[in-house]
Structures are given as structure tokens and as C-alpha cells.
Image 1 (cartoon, chains in turn orange, red):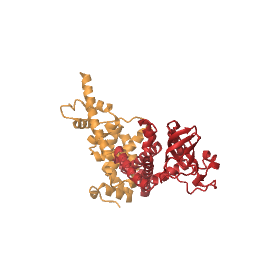
Image 2: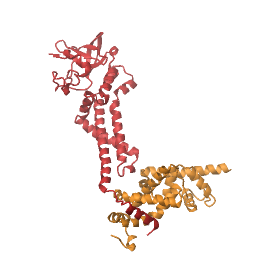
Image 3: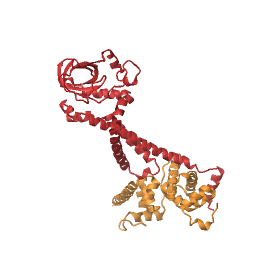
Amino acid sequence: MIVSDESISEKTDNELVAMSLENQENFLYLVQRYEKKLLSYIIRISGVKYEDAEDVLQDAFVSMFLKLNSFDNGLKFSSWAYRVVRNQTISEFRKRKVRPLQYFEENDLVRLADSMGSDDHFDKKVLQDEIRTILDQMDKKYREVLVLKFLEEKDYNEISDILKKPVGTVGTLVNRAKKKFLVIYEKINKSKI
Amino acid sequence: MTDIGNKILQTIKDKHIKPTPRFKFLFKSYAWTVLAFLMVVFGSLAVSVIIFYLKNEDWSLYIQAGFSQINFLLLAIPYFWVLLSLLFIFLAYYNFHHTKFGYRYRFSVIVVAYFALSVVLGSGAYVFGAGESIEGLFFNNNVVFYGQLMEKRQEMWNRPMQGFIAGQIIFVDFNKSELQILDPAQKTWFVDISRIHLPPFVHLDFAQRIRVVGKILAENKIQAKMIKPFFPEPLENCNMEDDNDADCILIHHQIMKENIPQLRIIN
């Protein structure tokens, strides 16, 4: 059953999943709904080029289609999709035996700095390079929660479902990540003086 | 239709990819849940044996035997069962963590919940005699060297100098009020039981593991002041003439077998 484009936007993710299971063509609507968000997520957590990120995303969507019957309604589809994409990205880097980098656009860095503290702490426009340095120095697990919380704008429950970690642990990680961010920032500033 | 969307759909069509059937995912999910449940059951049974040990442990005897407080504690802890129940709790956590939403709970929450559940279920199992039965089963069949471990435990209790003997009964003579027991060092002790009052719950049986508290009268003789079974383990179903009778497994133990001619009760 193919549905008209107008009515698609009114469909929930769960309805689109059910429709995709009936007809594979409908899976395209889910792809269209999430491709941009997931593509930028892949780039943020891996630092790959746009074309490479597209390849990872394609594999991730094919994997999603294959596992579509395992999707549980107790979960948000977006959380499940982020989880599959994250796993696909990690396994891609394992295959290549290289360490993932991260890539943040200027806008991302400003948003991150905004989330970390008050305006007194950061002159965001000037300190973009410094923010990149800070993120470089942070553990992957902290960077990952910062990206999901402040750039992907996911709540704790969603992050918990994406990373498959308890909500409490996610909260702890976010708080620690913010603290580490500020500590490294202070260090960089002191070393300048 | 987006470019990437096209490519994905084309790949799905070209490779004839179909979603994996739901029952496969359900089977996997149920398998983890069932395993998590089984681990709780096994853990609870191990806890029931721990309760059985602690309830049957005669704390006053340890103090009389002159053990230091640390030794006393170290001897009283049934390590085998404690480790086994911890292992089951860990396996239960591992299995639960792999269930669909198991990751949403913290390690500490799951472990504490499993521990509490094991204690509650283990207490129930103890009331129905599971602890005693399982201990006997492990000892008699020497499951995972449990029998040897228990012999070591008896060895620790065996302190003739302090008037403490541990061993298995190989001879009972009620006319002479005398027992013979074989200690873990394979030494035979003559136990004078004329001055003790045996409580009704103590049945002296062949191959029973007992502890004797008393006064050493000679190199191999002790005047018993108190006799305590390690655990109650009557061999009432044992047919002594049948070498293959599983109920006599203790008696057919190598050390005991050498003493079979002596094995009799004189009333």
C-alpha cells in the first residue's frame, strides 16, 4: 500500500514501521524523515567526509530494515534509529581499524559552549578553536553524551535507549562531561597566562 | 525521492532483503528472560544451603574449641555456597541485562534486587528442606569436588589436642557405649559415649559425619562430653549388601570400604 505524500507527515513513526513491514517501498518515508539528522550525527561522532557518512547511513538503514521486526513500541523509533546508526558507525571504524574523530561545525561549537556555562565563561566566537581542543581532550564517552544532549537535543531517557545505559548513568555522564569541559577550559586559559 | 533513499531501496530490492521474522527476535528475548529467571532459582537454592549451614552450625562449639574470632568466622562461612550464589547472581545480572529493556537498570539495583529475591526464595526453599537435600546430593556424589572440600572442612575441625574429633562413624556398639570413628587423617578413634545424653534428634548411623567434644583418654580414645552431627544424613535406605546401591555411596567411599567388615551396630 503506497500512501500519498500529504498524509505521510501525519503518520507516526510506529505507523510507518508497520507500513514498511507490509510494503518495503514505505520504508522510504522513514528514510526521508531521518536521513538528515542521522547523517549529521554520523559526521559529529566520526568526523568522516559527507560521502563516507552517506555510505555508513545506507548500511545502517539496510540493517534497520532487516531488524525492523525487532523494533519495540516501548521505544521511540528515533532512539532505535540512532542506536542502529551509532552501532553501524562504530563497527565501520572497527573494520577500518582507525580511531573515530569528531567534526563540529562552527554553529555546533557555539551551541555546545552555550550549554556548558554562562556567557562569562566563554567568548564563543573567539574560542571556537579552543572548544575544539577541549573536545579533543575529552574521553569519547563524555563527548558522545554531550553530542546527544546538546547537539542532537535528546533527553536523558532517549540517550539511555540510544547508548543502552541506565538513565541515572546518563545523568552522571552528562554532569561529569560538563565539569570536565570546564576544567580543561580553565587549564587552557591558565597555560596561556 | 531522495538520492540516498533510492540507493537504500535499490539495495533492499537487489539483495532481496526481507525483515528477519519476529519470532526469531522473540525467541532470543525470551531465552534471555528464561535464563535470568533460572539463575535466580539456582541462586536461591544455593542460598537455601547457606541458610542450612548457618542454622546447623554450632556456634558455641567453635568458641569451646578455642578458635580465634577470625578463625571462627573463616570456618563458619560456607565458601563454596557463597561463591556459587554470587556466581548465580552475576549470571542473573548478565542475562537480565541482555533482555529487551534490562539496560535501563543500574548494576547495583539489579544485583541488590536479585540478592533480596534470592534470600526470600532461598528461605522458602530452606523451609521445604531444599538446603539439606542439595548439600547431601553434592557431598554424596562429590559434585565439583564438593566432597573433598567438605573433608578439608572436617580436617580443620579435627583438633585432638583440644579434645575435638571430627570424622565418620564406622562402628557403633551400644552395649559398650562405644563408637569408632574414622577421622580425615584416616585414624580410628574409640569414643566412649557412656557419659553423654544423646538428644533424640541425634541418630548415630553408619558413615554419619559427626563432631565429638571430650577428653582425650589415650592416643586413640576419647571420653565424649558432647556429640554433634555435622549434618543429619541418615542412610536409612542403604542396602549394605548391594555394592551398587546409590544410597550407600558414602559407605562405598574408598576409605569407608576398607572398614566395611567393621560396619555394624550392636544393640
